[in-house]
Length: 261
Image (tube, rainbow, N blue to C red):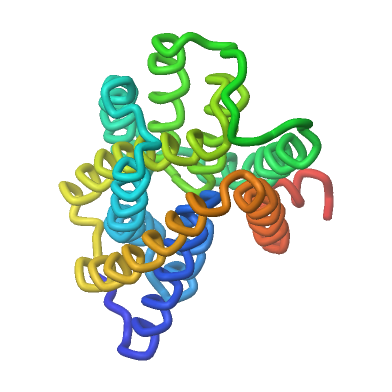
């Protein structure tokens, strides 16, 4: 089991704080922490497992803050959260055999699509709008699909959930952010449980990063609830584009190889 040195551990704690802050507002925390864990020398599966442990603290703290602020319909989200939890266990269970190269190749395209949607969607605010999917259909389709993705890979789940809540569930940006954290916490628990069974977690690193995640998430959630859509929307666009650029900057990205770059 790989363990980071003290110097690397301190840097990872700072990464956890920043990831918690950004994830509470706009998602994408995993695309900050997973590359950091990989660069620190963690094997891929252990990086995914450790990321799930530390991410629990951030998404849990953010979900609690939004729920305490009255922005989460907990009763209406229990079934989707349960399905996301179960699907995440399944996703994490096949993480070692899933074609990670395919997911890495698709991620920049999906993130850019999310950024374009939020950048050019008119009247994107905190006011609810017409639903394209009923709550039941949303819970039985989107929640388990993204829960499975979160368990198997994870980065960008928050941004994709945000897009789904706004575009399909018809929620305003602030409510969508709050419900995103609730479902993301459930899928993180499922993924964490599976990786823990497989012994693919660095407990010391994950717990210390998790403490930093709590601090960052609480500050980020408070900031988002105070500022609402006018800060969530531009930060979400910025995070999606930055993460897409980060993935495309990797010369081994399968998308670049497929087009001969």
